[in-house]
Amino acid sequence: MSFPRTIIESLSVSRLIIGSNWFLGYSHTSAAKDQLINETMSAARIADILVAFMQAGVDTFYGMRPEPILVRALAEAQQRAGRALITVAIPTLPLNPDAAGRAEAARILDEHAALGVAICMPHQATTDAFVNRRTQSLAGIEPYLAMIRERGMLPGLSTHMPETPGYADATGLDVATYIQIYNAAGFLMQIEVDWVQRMIWQARKPVITIKPLAAGRLMPLVGLAFAWSTIRDCDMVCVGSSSPAEAEELIELSYAILERRAPRVGLQETRSKASLQAKP
Image 1 (cartoon, one colour):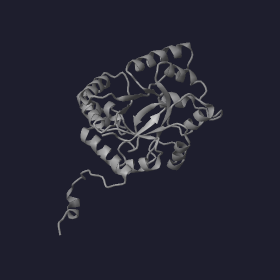
Image 2: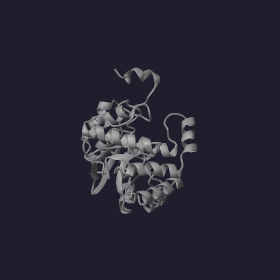
Image 3: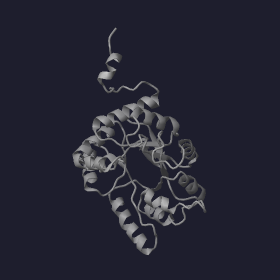
Image 4: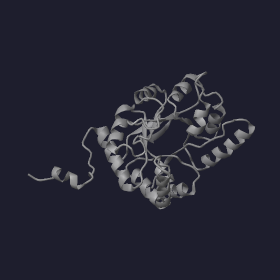
């Protein structure tokens, strides 16, 4: 099985991308929820989830970093699945690209290149600090993009600002793709959803949309239906999962939405729905 794919420069990636927040304890809900994730997640459990995605042809992983739990999980999953994962990294780089900043950036980027990262996109905390609305540019970030390219990784930009792709395109920055928050709830989005959609459609490079379920605030059917039906064929949806069964459900829902058919997933059963299942 091979999930629909798109091209970032010459690299083929699955349009559904495996998120990492539910692996690393970033719930966007509460400190208690983060703690629960960290207490219950393990390298073996992450590997189980990755394998579930990989068996469906979803072979692109977002959020690679030199965390021992991730390194072990990816090694185990790739060995079990018999195929390699394409990894996307979003490292935080120094905000001042002077000599000291570049030296630290070189260390960080060398570390990620050694992990086999294919696409490297400075994290929003770095990228958005360079966005200048007065000059409509990201002047100063160019050295980091060049350093990424020099290490054999495709450079991109991870941003929460809808202006970023337009500024980067207009000024000719050397980037291959963008990350943009995009969900039907407007969760963590800086402006209205319809404006962000327009920015995505105007981008000259493929866009990876993140947080389609608004960190659990939207049901999977609702969040995925909105995302898949309002982006371009070249764009991607990144979504996280906390179990193999949940991964399989996200994959089936995505297939059903893209194929315009009813999803083949089980529904939650509660006493309040008993009358809906009654036989005549």
